[in-house]
Amino acid sequence: MAQELSQSGKPSESLSQRELIERLCHMGAGALAAALGAGVAGTLGAGCQSGSAPSNAGTGRKFRYGMVIDTRRCIGCRACVVACKAENKTPPGVSYTVVLENALGPRPNDRPLFMTKPCFHCENPPCVSVCPVGATYKRSQDGIVVVDYDRCIGCRYCITGCPYGARYFDYGEHYESTGGVMAEVPSPEYGQYRVRQLGKSPVGNVRKCTFCMHLQDEQGRYDKAAGRWPACVKTCPGHALFFGDFNDPESEVARLLQERPAVRLKEELGTEPNVYYLL
Ligand code: SF4
Ligand code: SF4
Image (tube, rainbow, N blue to C red):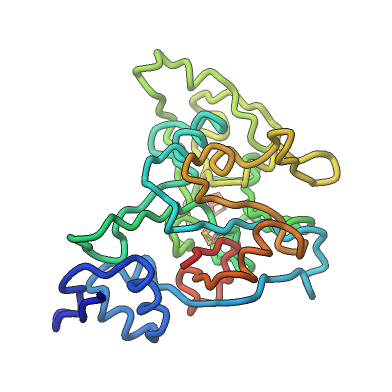
């Protein structure tokens, strides 16, 4: 049975996961902020959507890649975080995906709520408009938001511009426990296989999730059966992560949004994230 929110605006006792998120969905942004208490709503204000997948209508794009995340299936194991690190060879302090725990508030008598959070590859990405040198942009063929390491001057405006904390600066560190091995293994991202060295990109650049776009074929297609699929999704043991082309009505992600209500974070900002959380 759901408990009422306390006067402080925080859940006084545990709500079920579905009850909690559904309740948030029916609040306006202001009420949501009050309900969640200081700090949290500013990070995770949620908006609701049900029964429709986004389309490429008007974008002229071939693909609209995105993710659907089932918060009811995530067990918080963080295998996705590790898989992403192994795939993209990211250094300390750089995680293209993270898992938040109970970001919507304490839930003492219920199982924790985990939320995997990659880059949302927003339709209207504020990180792009603040870049003074055009080093970060949204790709015209598939909507993936990328960073051109050869143009990036490391000013970090985009880190400030992203309302979801999805960007990271590469300070040139490496994992000591690996004896520097990870630092010396080139990352396949962007198909560039750069070896990280001080003074050379991507050290000194901003880095972010690319939906593992180096796994696309020449036509820009992924292939799940062949393993050419984002590492986090491929690895998730709870089958909580789904990836695909929202523009294809037969895709798993499009069908999930047809079948189940979902939320996007900070919907009120108009960023139109391409990552949805199922209720
Ligand atoms: Fe840019 Fe942040 Fe949106 Fe990713 S989540 S596209 S980094 S604003
Ligand atoms: Fe652009 Fe790089 Fe500055 Fe980000 S850090 S705003 S990508 S130049």
